[in-house]
Image (cartoon, rainbow over all chains, first blue to last red; front, side, top):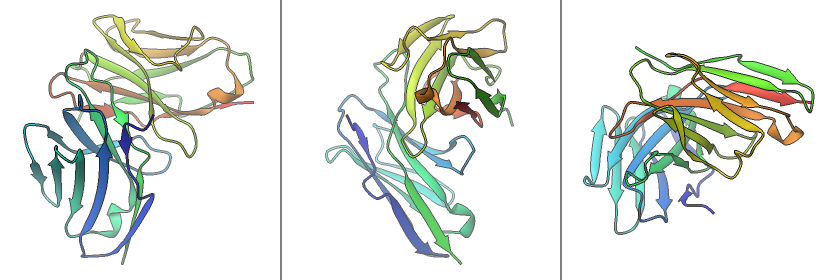
Length: 114
Length: 113
């Protein structure tokens, strides 16, 4: 039951270039989407989120785009830095649910090469 | 900056033993969660807790699991009789309300032998 899918297990980019991480979802009830960054043996760190009433949200080098009709979101990191190397998780929640639990994708390992 | 803390960072136990994982959520948050990640798999929801009661639990959260908020700061997950398959990273998270961004603790690595 993969309601949130990250189809690329890994991505490798050069320092200074753009990193684009993709995420697809199947549950139409999802209306809030988040990206988390995770280093080994640490907890997920919140990066950026987007509500379904928007199609873009920007925070510094990070931009998230949401295409509701395609049930697709993407995280753009520009410019990429070696310190961005980590696993990135896409997560989604449904506000109509009373508990706002997060459903996660399997993650994409981003490697930024100097 | 406020953060979620968890203790211990690593717990090793024998199968059948009880373990208690502890979390201190961010102080003004109202929603509390436990998630786990088995090695190589995705982070999966276990239970949510709001207004001093469980608001939802997953299929994983069977009778061997329980949660408690014994005072105004701590949030605990108890596994009554651990199994080998309970070995995982357990993450506590808290959220303050809409839009319900959740902030995660560093995790407890549970190893069941």
